[in-house]
Length: 142
Image (cartoon, rainbow, N blue to C red; front, side):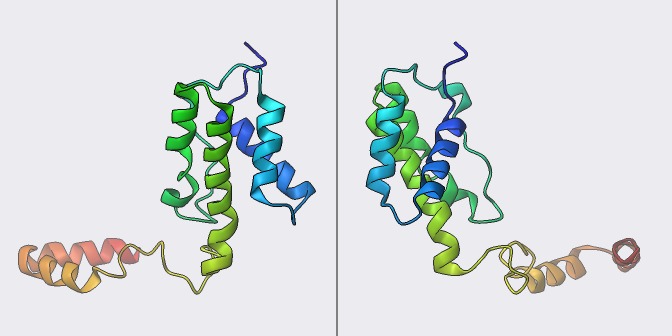
């Protein structure tokens, strides 16, 4: 069972293939994955994950191909598994190009307070007694 690749192993292999030929197309990466993994045991659906890429793209993007990978595991289709891996690979590679690096200092996409700060302040002042509000502000500063 030690020769059973995980989804993360297959994703890392796709990254290696891309690194070796950055100008190659996704179709050739997919073909190479299918040829390399065909005949091998299918990954376990219990380990349906790829390494986290939150610093490059939001989770909904880098995990985009996982449902397709799962379908490939269930139907025992390396073609389908490779297709799902390519979907996630495309997202990881293209998101930064399309939007700029997500971890760039000028980006505030991780600042969940940004869009709700005003409403939150209004509600807290309405529902929190002044002494509790003062104590909360003191704790935040320290």
